[in-house]
Amino acid sequence: VMFKDRNIIQDGVPDNFIFTYNKLKEKVKEEIPHIQNNYFEKLKKYLRIRPENKFALKRIHNPRSSKSQCTYFYDPKIIDEFKKYCPSNSTSQTLKQQIETRLNELFKDIKGDDNLQNPETRIKFEKCSKEIDSFVNQLNDLKINK
Image 1 (cartoon, rainbow, N blue to C red):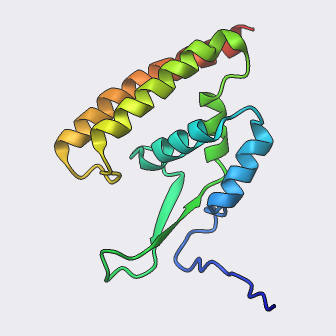
Image 2: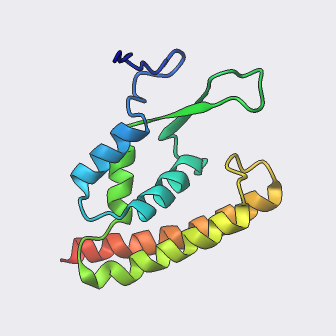
């Protein structure tokens, strides 16, 4: 049996985008052991498509093909963002559930328009993002007041 090392080509990707999906997931699990996989996936996608945050970089393998595969690279700063959205105590679990509910509604509304190209999609995203941000601020207030 022969094994071939799998190298992920990272040409054109800035040096600060060092995590691929597996490494990101491993680091987040290390920092936030109680995070559930489903919630991790929703947060990852949400943080990746937020236009004001540049924690993820999409590298398309063949830019000439619309069906080309891609690889996302993540900045380590995204882990701090995950921490903001992941309460560790039971009093803030209600806020986490509200965030998760809004994320579910958001992804149902935008239906695959991850680039927010459609103006209607962008408006829905911005409205939902403001609500999620207010829940995160409440979570952070709870953490500070403890």
